[in-house]
Image (tube, rainbow over all chains, first blue to last red; front, side, top):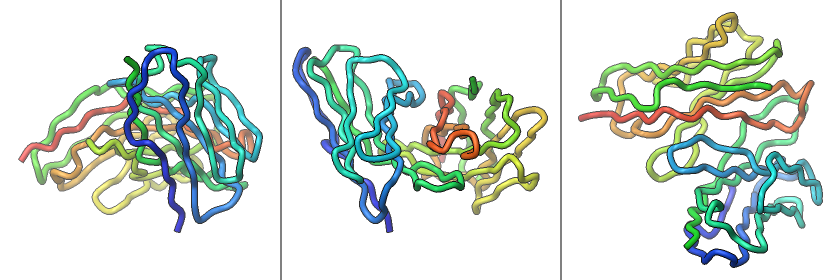
Length: 114
Length: 118
């Protein structure tokens, strides 16, 4: 069966520090991968998605970047964190198929910027 | 652009009762997919149920069922025999057909916080 791992679960970082959140998927190959941010009391905003290694699409302009160095690895980064980067970050995957597939989510990372 | 609207920020239901969560969406597409996700206090997002727009029959998954009204662009979730473990934030989401967009991207509503009372 497929599993998705996301870490760390919580992170407290000072303003201006770098960021690296990692997400890996097991049990499938060539998945579509996604990074979302969920602000307190709000819905999910899609930040990035990837349909293959090295292929990254950004949905909103921001201080963050994403990379996919391996087929099942998706990394969310920042060189200098802003206070506005605080939130709950979720990674998700879906099967790459000609038939629509649902997304499956990791457990999330709560990021607090001080 | 597609939008998803959940007009009920919070709802409450007694244990064993039935509750319906509302969702409306806006799209010019004829073929698409709709989903309900559940996010309990543990924050993990769990797929509850999905509906394909070209299917007229409403989807059901045990105690969860939907009322899909394509013409009205409405997709409500009914939870029967509510249980304490159903307490969670519920999100409605829209996905374009892969024929138009093969990325399986989801557009989420803002969520409804459901509290099941003992």
